[in-house]
Image (cartoon, rainbow, N blue to C red; front, side, top):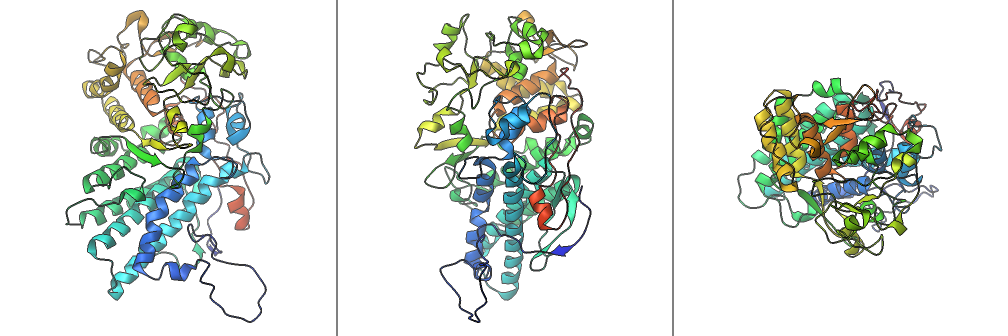
Length: 554
């Protein structure tokens, strides 16, 4: 981890990213009003409000735009193959690099293969955090000078700036071992704070989210609080909904910080339960619009071919009740082959043959998004793509493929699901022995997908109902080449994985890391990217924290 120090550097500032122009000093002092200017942008309340209104969009684009034009990589696609949420041998977007077995450490040297993706999230989140902090400071000055947009607009902008500030620090802390904490009122000019560990960064993130709630509490007016455009919503956001969103992020961040099961155990699960219980009651969707600047290129790209994405059986195979998954586990890693997953889970295609399962989601082209309630399809044989033997299957995750057909990538996309928040509450209940409460939340998703109720399971040991057709079936030691019916804990994990696949951000990776389910040797966090280190005159370093052997023997 980089040492602590203080220094002054020039920073790039989000929407004002082009604020300094290099050139010769010819003695002229001319203001070019065709170029943005930091001082002018922050000189008026309406200007700062405009900056604040774009902060969430800029961070969303930093996290969800892995295209050649957008940088060609980011952490999301890397975490997908690291956690078996997706499988691809391609070097694009860091998928093949991070998904290879045995795992490799994250290369942080100059010119490394994934340098763009390793830096992209750090860059977008850090820059917009500074913008949010500057906006909060600006509103403090405006208040002291008696300049205002009106009480509600002032409160709205300040609260949303704190929310985005907490969002940025939270995600930086989830993935990187260190970050710079940017607190309003603590920095002067271009001063950059010292690096702090992720634990301190997350504590700051939670403080900032609490500040967003505190500012919100000062609003006494009625009506919607946050404009829809600020978060690409279908409608303006009410105060209650906004409060639920903030508390849901608090629950996600607290639970996800731990890099190991021991660290996840230490999370404040009482606070997580309180926030989750008061969290969102419907999915938080971003209404993607290519023309509006809200995009998710990967969701569209995943539909191109099974070379870009297919399901590996490591996790999804736990749905199989035919014992084909057991045979797959018992086969040497590099000799494994695709098999037919037969399961009562309605999110998977039913059928005793591949043709029967294919008929559930008919499609003639890999780029045509099926209109289906199924999450998974058995693809036509002609679209099969050879890859690593353990990474190939007959299946693709198609829940969001329809987005590809809407104006090239438009439509609602969940960045946070109710299921995620429900399962955080369920996990908290399981940890304190409240099995009935946990079972009720788990059943909310099991029952609608044709899986038997777990209400009769009154402890953390007994298997879920279903007998030979139970779901999930999990690998069991000492050899991990056969499966048994999972317990309530595994039922919770199954529902969370199925309902959060390709939603959220790094969802499977964060949970699998904290649950102890990653392949041995998988990196547990990213070092501060070399670009940031070099800009500060520091050498690059390599983070060597990696996963131990997983609960499933991987």
